[in-house]
Image 1 (cartoon, one colour):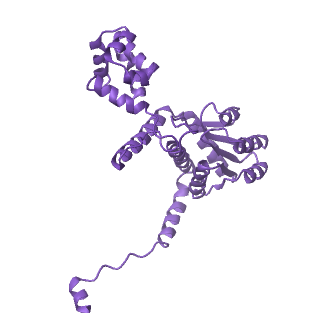
Image 2 (spheres, one colour; image 1 turned 90 degrees about the vertical axis):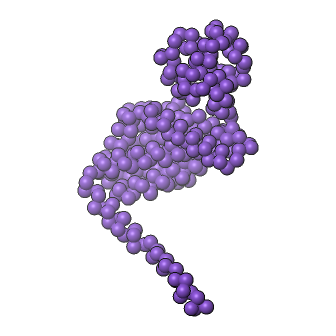
Image 3 (tube, helix red, strand yellow; image 1 turned 180 degrees about the horizontal axis):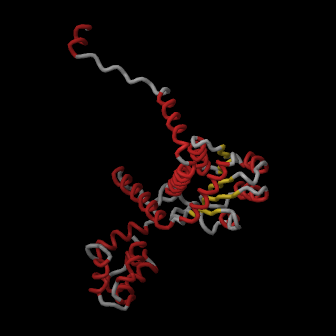
Length: 300
């Protein structure tokens, strides 16, 4: 909602722009103030405040403040930022899904295409030169690293996921210039991951980090030849379980996998087809259809 207001500002009349800036400066207070105080603080009339709410797509001030209160609500700490204590299952479904969709769409608009271009090129080159692609993560990021290994090794890439800090250090020490180290971290502050990334840099491997922009891990990969895939989101890693952040990281892995598969070209597809064919043989046979009712009675 706040992103939409921010995007609408250039198209609004000057008076309504002042109302928009008041919202963005302190959305929580805006949601609780009476219209007279809002008008006074924005130096506009009361009808202008209502017109602003309609200009940005809401039915009026009451509707706008109701939606705004939901946007700035801090949720339930250590559970989920979008839900309230008394939410029913139907409310949880809507809020959790809407929160995820909003984050995905925002990332779609913010993602740096040139950074993905460089990362895909580096990983495809690593695959072509039979180098190693190592994915490092701890905790929830370790789950993302394991997903990356599962996706990349199907492409014939020498991929491995490492989720133990000591093993990461040992493996990073054996990296070579043809290898890639992909380090995944929500906060970008894990000492284990930063230590492994520093070793990978010293060994000359290409470092690709998936983390929050401005974090220590992101700053480490700012040098030439290394790549930062910044993933920023409103989920406070100190207060909430990683949900949206993990989905965004998994999506980044999907983008990288798809890009590398396309770079490796049509020669890869017979292998992927064969994998699918072999996997089909591992599936359980379908259950036999139930006996007709008349037969069942005869057996009784």
